[in-house]
Length: 169
Image (cartoon, rainbow, N blue to C red; front, side, top):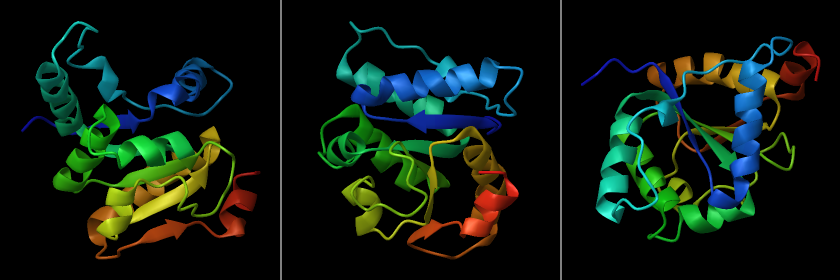
């Protein structure tokens, strides 16, 4: 297996604008936010077969050390439909047993089960939910993903308000 140093951002296609915003945060010199994007690897074309796209998604995810799921009602629906590419990504996330940071697109700082795909809830997967802001996402990628490796926790987690206060949020 290759060295895992990438962040995989999973999202419903309807939420692509939020993914593009994350890319803009990364490029903005005034925002302390960076990630090595797994989407830069194994590019598929729109004309690729479903199996080719799934194979490329899996190869991307095998290079990831952590995942950010853009949490929304669309993500919940598609991530649990058993057919979409997001559903395949969620299934693969569980199989690879890697940390998942859920960035709530509505800005909520708490666990919102309306944004978490059913497969993650069904297996009581250990996730952390944060607001969709660069500082707290960065914090979670640094803090939670390290803790994930050492933990036997399960279920949905959220940070206390004091963490947001320390980050100036």
